[in-house]
Each structure stands twice: as C-alpha cells, then as structure tokens.
Amino acid sequence: MGNSKLYKGSLNTIILKLLDEQGKMYGYEITQKVKALTKGELNITEGALYPALHKLEAEGLLDVEVAKVDNRLRKYYKLTELGEKETVNRLADLEEFIRSMQNLVNPDWNIT
Amino acid sequence: MGNSKLYKGSLNTIILKLLDEQGKMYGYEITQKVKALTKGELNITEGALYPALHKLEAEGLLDVEVAKVDNRLRKYYKLTELGEKETVNRLADLEEFIRSMQNLVNPDWNIT
DNA sequence: AAATATACATAATTTTCTTATGTATAAGAT
DNA sequence: ATCTTATACATAAGAAAATTATGTATATTT
Image 1 (cartoon, each protein chain N blue to C red):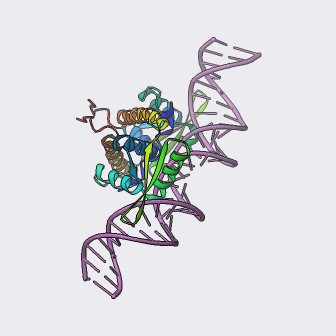
Image 2: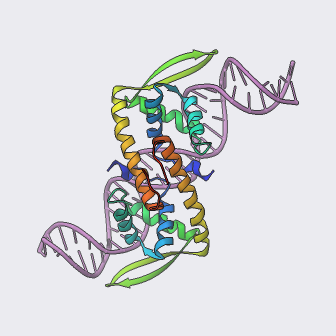
Image 3: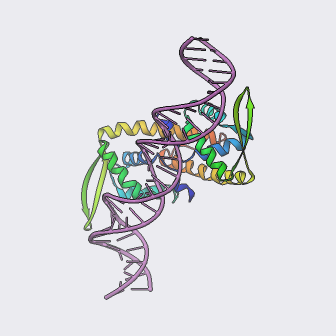
C-alpha cells in the first residue's frame, strides 16, 4: 500500500484523462473509478481530490454542473475546450515521464 | 520540459536503484547519469538531491566516503546492507506504481 | 579574462499530498 | 430500531518533497 503515496504530481492529469474518456463524472465517481482501474492500488483521498477539482475549475479547464440524485448532491465535471487542449499536452508529458521512469527503473521492459 | 516537475515521490527510489547498479556514486554524478539515461527528460535539481542523500544516509540506507579528486571534493555514496534490502522493496513499489499509471493513462500499452 | 562545468550545501518558498474533521442522506446489517 | 457502511460534498492543519535562489570553491573551456 506504500504506493498510495507515490502519485504526486499526476493527480490532475489523471482527472483530466478520465473526464476526457468518460465525458462527465462527479468526484466520488472518480475515486471509485481509479480504485477499480488500478485494482485498489491508487486510492485518491477526498482531501486531494476536491481541492484539485476546484483548482482545475478555477483554471478554466473544467465546467461544473450540479445535480440531485436520490436526494443527494452531485457535482458533475466535464472538460472545457481549453481543458481538452490541456489534456492532450499533460497526457503527453505524463506518458513521456512514465517512459523515462521505466527506462530508469527497468530498461528491460518492452513497451509496444 | 514540463516533465521535470513530475517525478515527485520517486527520487529516493531512483537514487537507490542507481547505487544498486553502479556500486558507488557521488551526487553530481547522479544528476548527470539521470540526465543521460532519460535523454534530458529528468533533471534532478541540487536542492532536491543533496537533502535526499542526507536523509537516506540518516536513515541508515547509505554510507558515505569522502574523496578528493583534482583538488575537488567528492562524496561517494553506496548502499548499506539495510539499504540493499530497502531498495528491493521500494523498487517493487515503484514498478507497481508505474504499471498502475500505465493502465490508467494508456491501457493499450503492452509491457512484456 | 570570462563563462561554463564540476562539486558541494542550505534556506525560503511552493506545490501537492495526508490526515483529521465536518455535514448530510441512503442503504445494509444486527 | 439502531448501528455501520456507503455515498457525496467540503475545508483546515500539517507533512513531504519538490523548486528556486543563493552561497562557496576549484577546474576547464572559450
């Protein structure tokens, strides 16, 4: 579980990537999705997620839409046009970073 | 270049891995090696490196040996026995983290 | 002679998390 | 019926780990 502390710096990009894929998501949904996709490896804490969403919104990368489901509040986020452009860049950076890390840590891995 | 900000949390493991490979290295050498291995992608700043080395030494994972080459100071670091054990664990964690990130960011990549 | 490279170090600041705490509703378990 | 867990948001305090700026000193290249 030591891994939960290793994703620093990439949370924003993960959020953008998921929203790009899924169209729109709400916060809690994002935490569950990441948990599922990583088989429990990455657990995004609420204390990290919500401030991150607010910041991305403030930067103009996300739009928010409030909904009420089962008498409970949900805030659906989706990419703005600017957000879509930024997603491409940040994703490219993250992918390059991942490749670099692999090269350092395990040059034997083949990525195809 | 945006990448230089993305390696948070993994610097210690990178240092340990390199020392495991190379036997012993000094600080400046580590920065150059990482730069070379990643083709300029990852640039470890001195403000990050030296405190990291000192901390690893304080934790008992590294031993230091001072040398003078060309009238200039060098501090060679190498893994202690404890350091070697820790390297195995942290490297496994980092590899798992990298795989998780790949799954999130680019599930199409095949790692063989 | 000046600029760049080598080689260390630390302090101030910023970024980005974790942990703790709070509110509120719904669903499942005892 | 009550307690626990899940859903769903939020923020504040603190810690961790970087960046940036600054400092010292020697060697090499221009």
